[in-house]
Length: 324
Ligand SMILES: Cc1cc2nc3c(=O)[nH]c(=O)nc-3n(C[C@H](O)[C@H](O)[C@H](O)COP(=O)(O)O)c2cc1C
Image 1 (cartoon, rainbow, N blue to C red):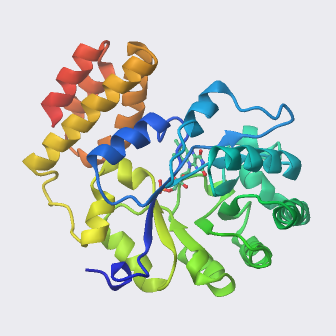
Image 2 (image 1 turned 180 degrees about the horizontal axis):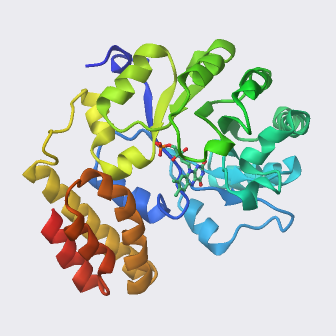
């Protein structure tokens, strides 16, 4: 057992928000079938001048869930405060600010990782949010951030800026925006956040694919609040549990028992999407998920192709049974 996972100072294991993938349906079905996740986040909810969430976004937060942190994407403190208040009324005690999304349509509007381009504007944003938090009963605010926009030279200033505010958590995905999801996460950049920010607020995110990867981060950065996994959890849904038990996956893939659980999970997820939306959308959603799960089935291209080519729920389920 990893030391940092023992006792009351347990590290929190968190599911990364992934737009279109870690939906409310996914989170519900996933947590029914798999153990190990302590907290989940919604994919970003847009807060803008309409002061209204879309129907799809309302569904993400509709049923209050204590281990769920809603994430907000916006460029204006005023809209963030509106969203925080609305979420508070639904029962949420923490909201998360997205300062990491690298998509050009987002960053050109100074949202997501675009917030990191102008630190005085980000300071202004945080000043407004925290003065509202001081004067009224707002939820706690955490942030999910990259280590810079175009260069790691920006990292120290970003870390020092966050250190000035009573953020409840700082989730660091130590890549810069220009890297999108490629290149190796920069552990030196995470180290800069570790130097400037209270360790018990820091959460590491990026490329954790095995229990060993997670253990290495906990050893390098003792005392951090948590670790967050996205693509690693999709490829191996047992990853959070393996991290907690410090168990590695079998070299030859999943055990028969694990395959049975995955099959049950995938069938239920498909059926729930089909019930909520339609067979066609359920099929698309499952294929999106398989783009990430494929990493766990090396050398099985023919079987993976059959999943990609499936034209109905029936064909899809038959193809999944052949691979699991
Ligand atoms: C398809 C996709 C959608 C994502 N959506 C979000 C999102 O809504 N909010 C967010 O903060 N990060 C989002 N991310 C980033 C992930 O939360 C995470 O930071 C990133 O995938 C790195 O972690 P990982 O290597 O464990 O996957 C997304 C990533 C991907 C690949």
